[in-house]
Image (cartoon, rainbow, N blue to C red; front, side):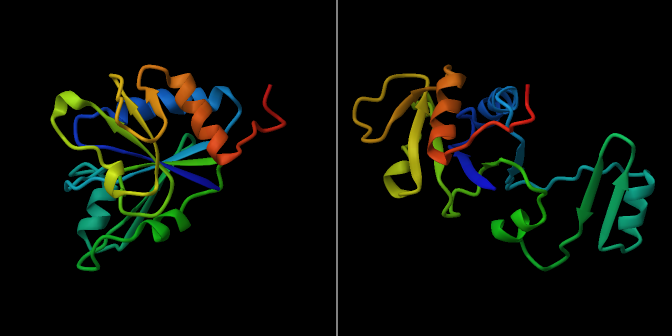
Amino acid sequence: MKIFGIIGWSGAGKTTLLIKLIPEFVSRGLRVSTIKHTHHHFDIDKPGKDSYRHREAGATEVLVASSKRWALMHELGDQGEPDMDRLISHMSPADLLLVEGFKHHPHPKLEVHRPINGKPLIYTKDSTVEAVASDVALESVDLPVLNLADVSAIADFIIGKNALHPRKDHP
C-alpha cells in the first residue's frame, strides 16, 4: 500500500483538499483509504448508545457492524497515542493511503500552504515534503509548487510519485 501525506498548519485547507482528492482518485480506479490525526479529544460514539455503554462498562474494544459499514473503537487508557505504523497495520489493503497530519512520520508528503495564515512553510524543516500546494504563486520555494485549486494536477503528482495504476477491473 502506498502512503502519501497531506500536512499543513491549521486552516490551510488540508481536509478540504483531501475530500476533493478522494473522489478524483476513485474516479481513476484507485482504492483509497485515509488516516487523520487530531490533537483534540474526539469521540465517534454517542452517549446512551449501546456501543458507548459497552465502552463505559470497560470494554477495551467495541466493534459496531451493520450491512453498510463497521467501525472498531479501541480505548487506549493510559497507553498514550499509538504511532502511525501501528495504526497502518490495522488498515485493510488499498492502492493509496492518504494521511492527514502525522507530519513527523517519515512518509512522503504534500504541504498545503496559505501565506495569508501567516505561518512559515513546513518543508524547510521536513525533507519528506515533496511538493507544496498553495493558493498563490510561491517564487522562493525550491520544490514543485502546485495550484491548490487544481485537484487534477495534484492527483497527477501524487499518482506519479507513487507509480500508481488504476485497477484493471475499473471501467
